[in-house]
Length: 93
Image 1 (spheres, rainbow, N blue to C red):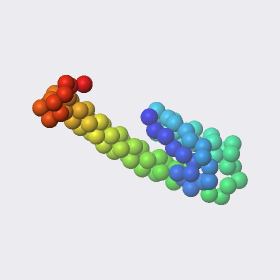
Image 2 (tube, one colour):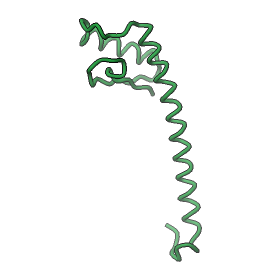
Image 3 (spheres, rainbow, N blue to C red):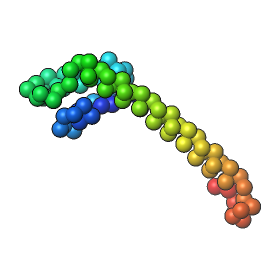
Image 4 (tube, rainbow, N blue to C red):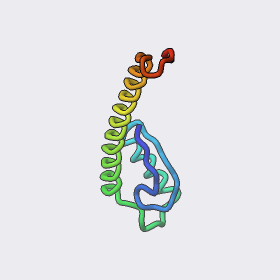
């Protein structure tokens, strides 16, 4: 799932949209621009918007990968510490 704030593309707006695919995200944000920012000169061109969405999607995928690794490490650490009762003298969780 991808998400994009209007302010991510340079507009002063807190609108956020989601899409399962990049093209869905592009369509939703373009619809928002048409209904809410039609006279704003800061609205990006289609090419600028596509580049921004492409860059955001790469960042999201990298962040999700890093979060998955951190979560796996956390789970492994918790599992290891719950097995080793010698350190605490108490029973595992």
